[in-house]
Image (tube, rainbow, N blue to C red; front, side):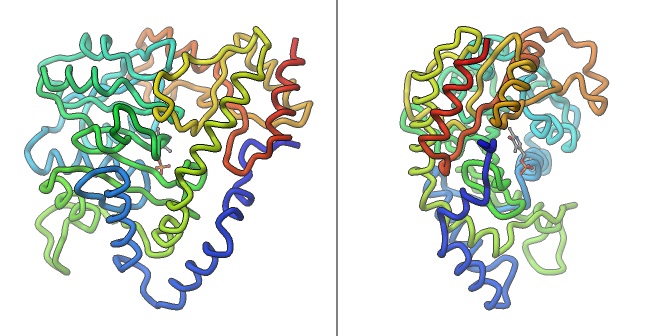
Length: 367
Ligand SMILES: *Cc1c(COP(=O)(O)O)cnc(C)c1O
C-alpha cells in the first residue's frame, strides 16, 4: 500500500530533534509570542529574502491579514477588486471575501494551471487594486511578466505561497516577489507544523507592523487597541517545530524534484498527461505532483484497487461551491477541465524509490 502522504514518516525524518524541541517548549512554561516565534520569523524572512516575516495562525489568516492591513492603511477600500486564478484552493478566494473585497476569478493557463498574465490584464478594471498569484502545486507563476503588468496598472501583488515553500525563479524566492506574501504551514505542506500555522512575508515596514497588530487584537501594547483586530498567532510549539523542519526544507524539496523526475521519465502511458515542464528547475517544489487524464476517475479507482492512494486537487472548482453561488454563472472551461482531469500522485520526502517505481508501474499498466 502506497499512502498519498505518510506524515508519520515525514516527521520521523526529523527525530529526535522534533520531540526534544517540543519538550523544551513544554518545559519552558512560555507558549505564545516568545523566543521560538521570534527566531522563526527572523529565519524565515532571511530564507525568503524579505525584510519581515510575521507569524500567524494559518494560511487563510495570513492572506486575510494582508488584505485587512492594506484596507486599514488606506491602500485599499472595501469593495475593491482582487484578481485571482479561478482554479485555486478556495482559501485564496475566502480571504478576499473575508476582507470585504471582491474576488475576480480569471481562467488559468491550460499548460501550467497557473495564473495567465494575459487574462489578468483583461480582467483589470477601475476598481482593481491587487492581483493574487497562487503558486499552485508548488510551481512559481510567471512573476516577471506579472510584476510588469502590476506596475503598469499600479496594482499590489499578494502572493499565495501556501504550496510553494522554497520555490524560486530568477533568483528570487516565493514570498519575495509580491508586495506581500502568505504562507501556510498546515501539516501536509512542504514545510509543515504539527497543527495549524502561517506567516506573512514582506519588505514593507508599515504593512508588517499593521499585520502584526491586526493578528494580535489590533494591538501592539497590552490593553491598548487602535484597530479592530483578530486573534491569529503563531505559537511557540509550532514555531519550534518549524525551526527544526526548516533546516531540512531544501533537501526535502530536492527529493520531491527527484521523485517528480522519476515519474516524468518513468510514466509512458499516453492516457496520462503532465503539465508543461519547468524551464528553471528551482521554480517547482512539487507540493503536488499533478497528472491529467480525461478518464481521471477510472484511473483513480484503478490505482486504489492496486493499493496506491491518490488525491484530487480539487474535485469541485470554487465557482461551483455552494458557498460561492454568486459566481456560479461564470463560464470557466479551462478551470472546469482542470478540476475534472487532475489527479495527484503520492509525493513526499519520505517516499522510497521502491514506492515510486511501483506507482510508475501501476500507472503504466492502466489501459
Ligand atoms: C493550504 C492552502 C491555503 C490555506 O492554508 P491553511 O493554513 O490551511 O489556512 C491557502 N491557499 C492555498 C493555495 C493552499 O494550498
